[in-house]
Image 1 (cartoon, helix red, strand yellow):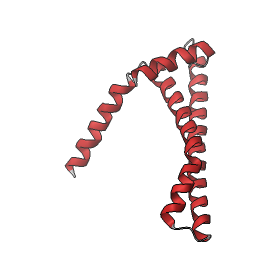
Image 2 (tube, one colour; image 1 turned 90 degrees about the vertical axis):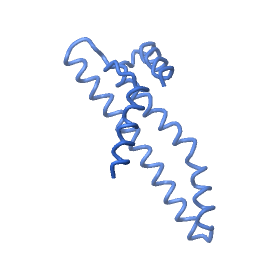
Image 3 (cartoon, rainbow, N blue to C red; image 1 turned 60 degrees about the horizontal axis):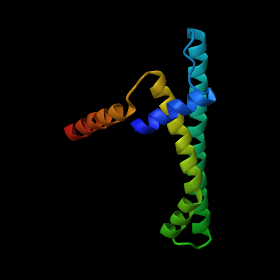
Length: 121
């Protein structure tokens, strides 16, 4: 993830897409724009999931076996889903870079926190 985070930092700088860090107002507007764009990408994932379920249901109504219908629909949305997930990762990485986070360490620390919480119950 460190490699990915470094790549996105350089990529965003090259395209001048990084979150602006000049003044409070610049940073605020840039962070809000990044948030809006990230939210849009998450909504696009939701749309693809809706498409997955609608397609599966339609095929089932047409006589397909449920598991097979789901696999076919899954394959149909997979490529676009990968693109939208990549967009989300890019916006999340942009946030991580702005706040100077080591996203890989943050990720593993959070997963350990969740594991401990689950093990308590």
